[in-house]
Image (cartoon, rainbow, N blue to C red; front, side):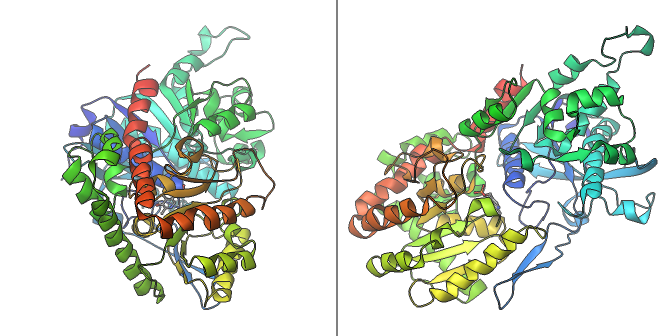
Length: 566
Ligand SMILES: *Cc1c(COP(=O)(O)O)cnc(C)c1O
């Protein structure tokens, strides 16, 4: 039996996220946003920052990906058993949905840091006897269903989340919204802080908006308007009861429809983007708002592969807590040891690729890696823009490719990308050994970012708010070759930590391909084959200049100092 008092005794910061990657066996995440939420909580646990996370239990998970014989994605449910990893809580709260009450219960997952810290994670669940069958499914499918389903989930997350924290006896000093999905929590706070009716004079707000803003922090992740969650007021009127008066709601969330990003921006004193460029882009999207930048990071222990953990333990004891010490990688790790650790990680990937796909890769040839959500703007196909050029590069400098990634079940373009990649794989069969690992998850991510020789990223600018897989590569001494967008604008030192594709100006789709080919042919592969010492210097640069900075401990210390204490 877990006693909640050990967590409720301390005043905490509540962190709300629609998805969270707690561990590989728990499929409550779909991509970077969930990994970031998990890494954020892992750092909070390591640094003993008093927080509590709130997310949905997502019983049916995201989905399990199979690739059929024609190279098409097939989706299977990936149900999990919360009772295997979490403890059922006794509290239940009700939220109004479609004119009835829906009951929300929760599970407690305890996230342990590498020292003494522990963070409680509450996973909200509507699959309980009190609810009608349809309502029991509200917390089943991560990013599933239509607008109506999504709004119901966001009511459970934001309003249900706040109410259950209160019911469980938490005392909270701040509410941090990881993306706009949880913004309804701020409405619930407004309702809580409404002035008594007799005290409101005509023309004055009926709510203590400054008090809500004082307690809310918002991290935006979406650099384009089309990506923001929006609901028509017609839908809102049908599904969500009147939490606050409609006129105030429109003032805060937008005249035409309820924009969750706008709502979160208006009700948070502290707003930030996830990289410097992303903050600039967000300021243009929302003129007049003060948008700060806290560049993302990844969790040190989680994203260093076993050989690199061992290497860092030997040379930099304490690196798990204070990753800044990795700045000393250049002087203090002998070349042979780095190369050896990398060779071990690479062999691990080669074995995994053989087991999962049957493709035999060679340890002596360089591997290019690319894995992320398969969605149009990530441009997984950019590398294959000019097949003849790619072949001619491979004839001069043989190389191999490993790919992975899931497409959202409703993303047609994403599905086509996966098919196209498999088409290229067959087309290049005799020239470039290539594998597509199905069912991308945290484990496969760690094998890939540590086992390849170059980590590739080719998003369409300015769509990549930050990107984090490249930071994971840096923790394993793997240099990035990437378009200058998101974190890489800050992380790239040309020839020092990796290489840039194109420049940081926005370009038309496809325009970066020539630069990508030039870099591979004239810079990256010649260095790999011609100058082992020079190559290892770049590997060390990735560790000393990227991993030492782009980690979630630095990010968390900044949130703690700038957002949570103010
Ligand atoms: C790190 C990670 C991501 C995010 O990678 P990006 O480079 O930000 O797209 C997505 N999925 C998994 C499983 C990851 O580990």
